[in-house]
Length: 201
Image 1 (cartoon, helix red, strand yellow):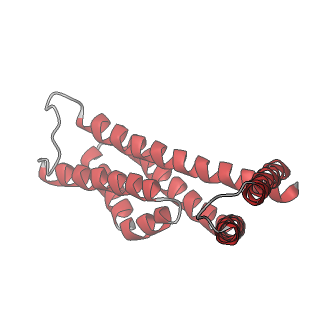
Image 2: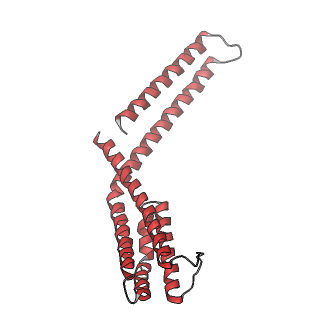
Image 3: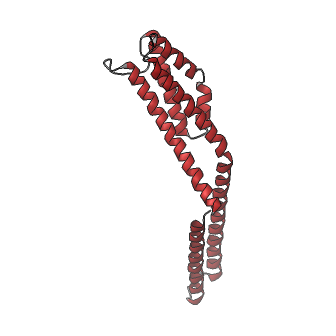
């Protein structure tokens, strides 16, 4: 927990304690028929105790999450980089297929290599976030549809305008998915920087 947040929490605890003490003081000074002052004090004491317990649990959970995140970051980032490099390499290879005399075969080969790693890529992406996993799942879905279209000349589970360039349609969809995944990786890095700065301070 950084110094600013720590100061705010201590300040809130102080204000809360003062208010409760004032309420207890007033409860003793003003007679209230039918209300037992000791019962009121016990009730307020339970509220104070519960509040401090809840605060302690929250601080502990935050510290544990930060520690676990920092310990796992290197492994998670390594997996993210593997996914990024692997899909970017395939997209680059696909781009070079446009100048190949055997364009359809070149595309099919590139996509099949990528699809053969689909479970590993999704597992690695899942280490980053649910959104990162979904982005790679969608990317591989487009790759699969592109592969089937290249081999069989027909679409499966994909509705697109027949007038558009098929290559650019699938290529752009896969690149968009990769960009979404990259955004999730950036969020991971920013969270790491935030926690690292907290630990340094």
